[in-house]
Image 1 (cartoon, rainbow, N blue to C red):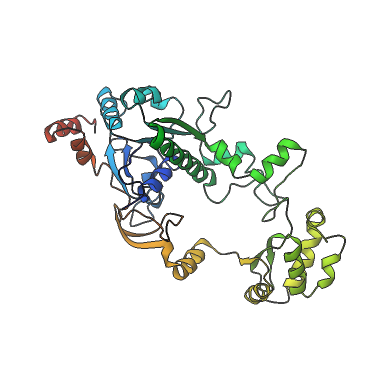
Image 2: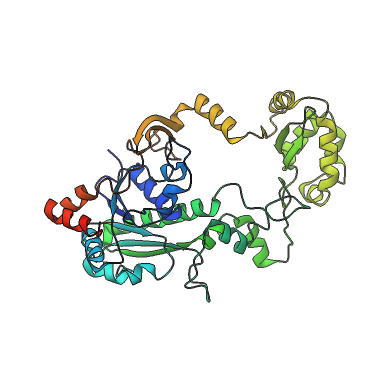
Length: 394
């Protein structure tokens, strides 16, 4: 039994932002119905073929959903969608602004048939003047927000973060707002019109920077693996050429690092004695640290620095990380989830509730897998469904 048992969610989303939020709701027990285009489906069903010939991208963000195909360009398709809305609690979408309106599924349209609907939209730019109708994706948001300019080597060009961070962050913002609206609904019975955007999410990922920029004149620039406000707080090279990340920027950890490096004299070197001076002289700091790190391998330094309680980590490839942490923390994943790609291994939800990490025991669905089942639930006969399918409405 999940916390959201009895909650019905309609996932009109595509790609990542809205669908990932919907998947987390399915992990928490909600009945999530994913609505896809007839025959074509969600565009990410066909981005890759890495998991038993199926899209790993799609499998990773659509666990636990039932799947219905529907042609929202047709009047009958729109009528079916509104009928689904009558029994839904939450609607999620992340189309270009205006698309849901053009299909007769605006907030006002849905509210007319379901007055207490919680309707959440994820757009690229929110209410930004001049961008009201603009579409965008993760990389566009990273570029516009300044996040991309903050990422990459000091002397190189801007770089996209290695993962779709703004998409995932927008999913989390959407889910937070939905859960808050559901909590209010319990006491007031009111629905809600919720909005977030990839731009909002991008800024939310940089709260330590935005306050400074809005209230001063800092010139934060990309620092490779470093941090424009903290030092030492980046990757350094050990004697075997492998990388170690060291995050010893506050006074006590800096003292312990100097002792571990057998350079206690550096602790009070006025050029690097406090975080402000170390940020200013980060090049000198890196040279001094790397010089000492050449004396041992990365593995040896890991042991030494941990003994001194210095924040340190190896820089792992993703496959190395997943192998290590699934072996040493088996609660974070689950084996043999049935999906449209067969039985697969997946990470559970990224949080614990009462000592357990939730997950839905059913993986991502095949395109239209539950169309008949869902339509029967809202009153259609099999004969009517067969007719709709013959005319490509479903």
